[in-house]
Length: 297
Image (cartoon, rainbow, N blue to C red; front, side, top):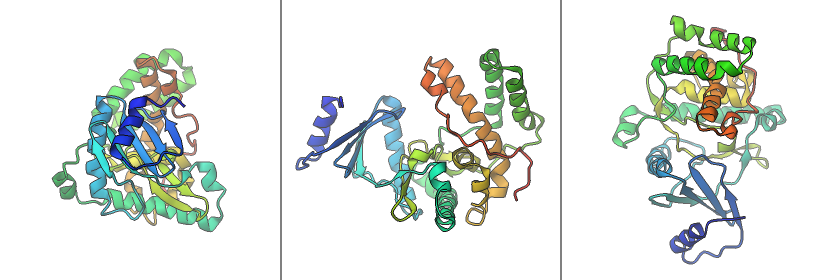
């Protein structure tokens, strides 16, 4: 475990009386390295200027959402340029397999927790967010952004794709191009990237124990968050969210389109930055998504 010396120096400088018995080091994040001390303290170190800005932005978001969310989220007890720390939240990633293996009662309770989280997040008053200085999420997209993505996919990815894959992409973007799919929305606070490893599940209580990493949160389209859940768990699970997330019918078609673009976005990034790991980032997505325009069951 090659933890940079200055990371440990920073932790000891901030926590003078901390006895370090065990360390976990995670470098998987795109903008942060994470050091977990004694499974009690999470210390995040920004990898670059983007990461530094994201930590300050996340602090603003967390200060707001603490007042509106029932589920536990981090509270930054220390924040400075490039470094933040908070108390460790126990739990394991809530994968689709984990969710499907639960009893019907536990599965229903967990899906309800997910739905209520999204409803509470997306219902935070806009004026509260503006007054707190919360800006747009990096995940926010306009119709023009999607049309540019379509052009980039054709230019960059099509030479590497088979004909049936190209046809699937044309069909995916067709409702946006024709205007059949309305891409307008009222901005709300979105998480932006709630992957399964950001949703912590407690196997003892069979329930979600907390949510972490709000670095991509900000104002945007609520369909983005539902798209990520479609990718995480599939549509049959997401449709069960409707009773606790009444916005679902109004966002589901944009979410269906959005989730179809995720692998394309990451494949483009992989080619742009010559990093195959980016192209592989969405292996494991659920493939159970209905076509745009399909009625909810």
